[in-house]
Amino acid sequence: MNLYNLIYGEISQQDLLNNYNATITYEVLPESIKGCVFNYKGINNIMINKNLSYYMKRKTIIHELAHIELNQLNQSNKDLIALKINKYEDEADKYVNFLLHCSKNEKIEWWEYYEKNRNN
Image 1 (tube, rainbow, N blue to C red):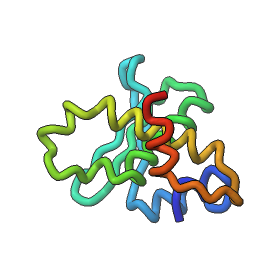
Image 2 (tube, rainbow, N blue to C red):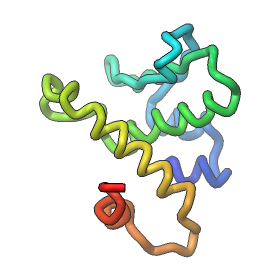
Image 3 (tube, rainbow, N blue to C red):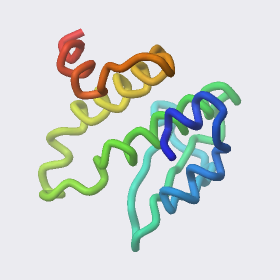
């Protein structure tokens, strides 16, 4: 069960949230912040800006789930995560883009795709 299954309607959003032990809350956030995700006491907490349109909320939820799926919340040196935030944001965006453009019959692996397209 993963983000691919959610995007292609094979599972519900709640199924994936349960699988990732994740919750979503909607909060008033600064306009420049669409959302964020963090792990606290074993629960992946996704926070979404409640002022976003329905479409942007959905897109942001998928982006934040990508951070969880890419295991970016479990980095070994938390002090260095601030230095790599752009890298993690880019990886999550590219991963979602990959999932949106691959078909069920496509055999390409994510990391192969990422290496090929990481400078784009």
